[in-house]
Length: 476
Image (cartoon, rainbow, N blue to C red; front, side, top):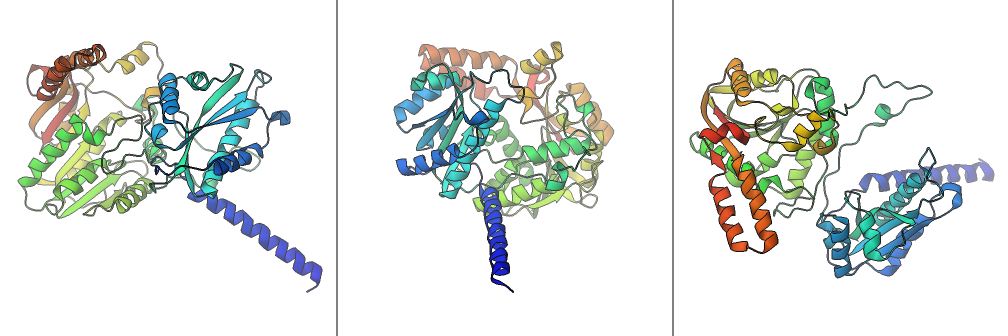
């Protein structure tokens, strides 16, 4: 082998190694929502911004500007004026506000200013990971112009969000990624069908589309085991609805010696987590059933990181186009299903499959969202014929059911209703509005009394059950 051949071989090897290192960097980068209090040096911040400035810009204009915010009072001002509610905005030692002068590119059909900013934000995130820092791009901001106002930025610079940066205090499970062969075509488009429908009406969705939506939606939202909520959504595990569900399941468990328990369509495993935490040792087997291997992988990895005291077996739907729980007939004594029927135009096949695996004398706790409750966002969209997912970004397709519809479906599937409740009856919505008003006016004693009344009246089996937010059924 000549010296030239050796040089070429070495160059190819180095190129391959560099490419693998870059892919490894991409693979290990995940959004961080829990940060240590340790400050980040200005040198590291400068290196991150330098990485961003090395990415291309439209016509090489380089019209970005980055502002690193480290003062707690200024963070609070940014949050207030922008209406960004995520708590990691406060917890991250550094916020990097990203601005760009879009005035020269307002009519560009390819939105080059936005693409330019997107590339620079990607560089910030990758540079943070390369320096062992955690970072997350915060784009869920209702009034991004408020960031510029808080920081004294002139109006010709448009804010494109924040990058929260700090030393990692968490290692979240990775989200599910599409394989390359599913997103790459050569020379001609060859995707056979739409991945999703921009519509909340379930009759337009196939089971495969619903499964894919749930699989890719599953990403770590920063809810730690101690209940610290790091996302704009409240932690459902500490809501009255969820507490009702886990308490009723506990009462069911007390009546059966070491039962086999199944949670249907577990998604991120919150119900299963509560069962493990509260009732470990009382169950012979605990199963979590959902539609894709990616969801099963996520739940398993999440529970391993949390070091829960018990174990759970994840089950994956055995067919692509129909429900098939991979368990023998009559295998389960206790079963739960938490507001999942709403995904389907016809949930009867799922209910029949649940009936098949439930043992004679077994018990099912089923929660269903009630059509007769004023879910105002949905009624507004129906009236305007605007069915885009919007508000439903974290649910996907959904259909609200009337109590009579639910009970008819349950009978057709072979269940017998042993008890029925309404959760959060409609009149409590007025109390909630009153509580917020009292808090704003400083009438905290009155607000506390009304809040106690809301908690006492959250569960009802009387007249208002028909007009409650959620219908709860105990079945056998």
